[in-house]
Picture 1 (cartoon, protein in one colour):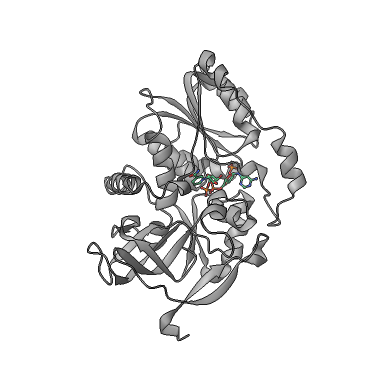
Picture 2 (cartoon, helix red, strand yellow):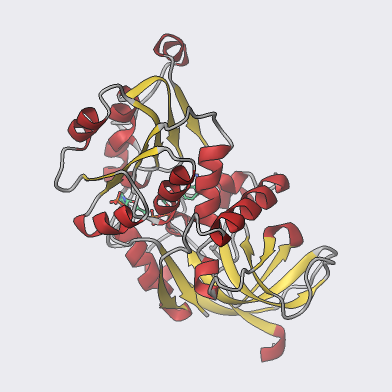
Length: 347
Ligand SMILES: NC(=O)c1ccc[n+]([C@@H]2O[C@H](COP(=O)([O-])OP(=O)(O)OC[C@H]3O[C@@H](n4cnc5c(N)ncnc54)[C@H](OP(=O)(O)O)[C@@H]3O)[C@@H](O)[C@H]2O)c1
């Protein structure tokens, strides 16, 4: 395989720790009509990539299996195009269902966008997955009252920091929750009305004081640790939106202790749908990685998000860069729960 016809990919052959992230040489993919090949400049890291490595990510099991190259988002330069929308040397960014941890990525044209000039390649690589998730959560599933009272868990993280900003674009009241004190100022700078540091404050006591009538919406990717109490703090017509369960998973070591996870699962919150009728509350769940066939979602979200970015209503993601070869360090960092904003691999 010559250097010119090949690419480097990070490949995982079976579930496990950081040592499973192997850099391999593979042939460049060939393109079908409507597809584009991009030489990546930067790749966004998402918490879900660790779940893929652990072998617990449902859509990875369903759509790929082993071996798998993780990665949902990237930025780079078009090297070959079978699309009328993109040409060689265009600076682009986009989404893919896996395979972004590579020097080259092939995507259908609807998953690709021209990079705004003032967005750096690193910022562009970290823009799509988190902002799209936040946009989908807030604007595709429910109709919120004006100035809704919204609680955002893990508000200093990738998705959380986008949720705070998008909720403020619509003038809602945002109660942002963080798990460590060093995240407080960052989340305040995003415009949150109140930041609750659950490492030093009583989360639900504070919420009761701040919103005695209850919350309109809770955005929760924590899992059983907060589902039940959150549900009880909703006001009538309030919604609990569930889109992850990271507190079931380890913060260090890179490996799942299934006994600990199983024990935590015993505390899971089960809801009887009939009870929802008299409570006047709702529970909603989603996972975007199962929605890639809904192509209309992509352009609507991204065009609106780019517009808001260009109007100064939302910020470029705060990024921390890692070299492509240091992917294990990036996984270690996002797993620790200590990172703020987005982590990206620089190719
Ligand atoms: N359903 C979807 O379509 C979708 C799409 C994207 C992301 N997600 C989910 O959204 C969540 C955030 O994703 P992200 O990529 O933006 O990550 P992130 O928020 O940058 O990092 C995860 C955050 O979760 C918190 N956390 C709590 N317990 C943890 C634990 N045991 N291990 C690690 N972190 C823990 C930490 O913040 P605090 O300690 O401050 O709470 C940490 O910063 C993840 O659960 C992810 O799977 C879902």
